[in-house]
Length: 121
View 1 (cartoon, one colour):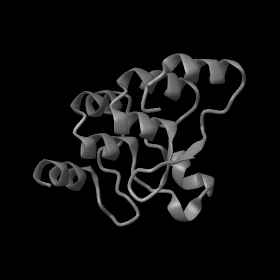
View 2 (cartoon, one colour):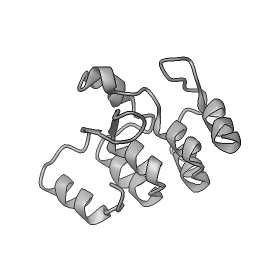
View 3 (cartoon, helix red, strand yellow):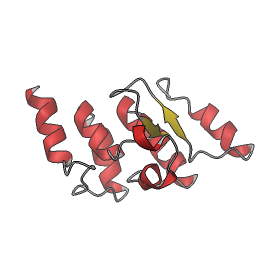
View 4 (cartoon, one colour):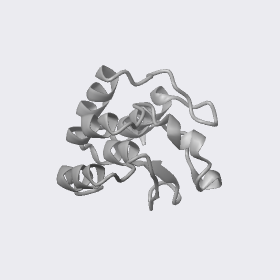
């Protein structure tokens, strides 16, 4: 996902591939994230709409419901990840698509903390 390759995502989708997968990452202690969260991490705003069109939820809810790699799956939303990375345009796009700015992770931490931590840390 770090390359932000829309053509690859489109090809997988066109061939009937499920884009609602979770991918084990090297980020944040090897957690698993959905493709939209990975796009948010890297600031690939051009991937938001194609991934939403493929059925992913703007808040990454399927991450929590999947049970796949359950102990390693974070409840951080794509919006939280974008805020933590400081991707302002990604934050704006996710909010315009209906992302919940009040969502909290499994520890009760929301986007405000993530943003503040990025700005001061």
